[in-house]
Image (cartoon, rainbow, N blue to C red; front, side, top):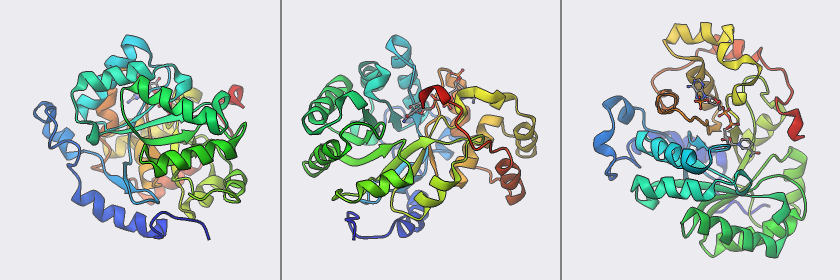
Length: 313
Ligand SMILES: NC(=O)c1ccc[n+]([C@@H]2O[C@H](COP(=O)([O-])OP(=O)(O)OC[C@H]3O[C@@H](n4cnc5c(N)ncnc54)[C@H](OP(=O)(O)O)[C@@H]3O)[C@@H](O)[C@H]2O)c1
């Protein structure tokens, strides 16, 4: 039997998380000096959490930072925190951990209010390299610990990396450990040696690539699914898709909001990226409507069942 942290099944976590989310609707905003800058709409729409398999809460909507580098990266992270984001997703390979760290510092927010994710790149796989890469990442980010550290891709010495990450977790330097871009079989293989089951699998998922196999697998496991490129990074004309626009009209919501609400109703954590403050605010405003079953079925029909990023294969 796998080690599930506190031994409670994820389904129970999910059930509890609904209650938890309601109870913590304003957590992460109340004690911040940014509170005064938030409108009532933003406060109303602050972000629910899900309990991961080790019992720690993770925001169900966060901010992606791929390609946001240097002063732009710093400004975007600062803006994102100022409008209410608390989950910030970065990675060594994005080359922006320093810029992200600077944005966090400039925001003045209490570190404990944030949920910071970074990822171990393929070149750093293996036990010793993982420990070094982790130290490099936290130093660049200007933090003493990570909330979540992911193996970015299932390449190299995954077993050695995972052992190092389990130790860092046990030492309290990482609050949750997980993986990214792992297929169900690759997660099963890990469980041959893993003492801790990955808390997260962050994979490409959006309306054009719904990943039904991974979705069903993860839904019935204690590994939470997280979507990267929840807007397919704008590919395949997503922001001018007529079907999504028509659905949005019914609820007075944009295509972006329909997409994010769809992820939310599937219980998938999403980390949209934006360089524009207006979009950041718009993307948070998804908690006051519910897509009807018929709309979910229409969105299901948009699935092309293939990656929109074949160049990353
Ligand atoms: N684990 C992995 O292998 C992996 C791979 C890729 C990405 N990721 C993570 O996932 C995050 C998100 O994915 P992504 O960055 O590829 O792309 P994305 O979030 O799917 O899409 C970003 C694009 O959407 C636009 N956008 C955002 N909000 C919008 C709105 N309300 N209306 C219209 N356009 C909007 C942005 O333009 P504007 O800037 O103009 O708003 C940007 O061009 C990344 O940043 C990264 O943190 C992880």
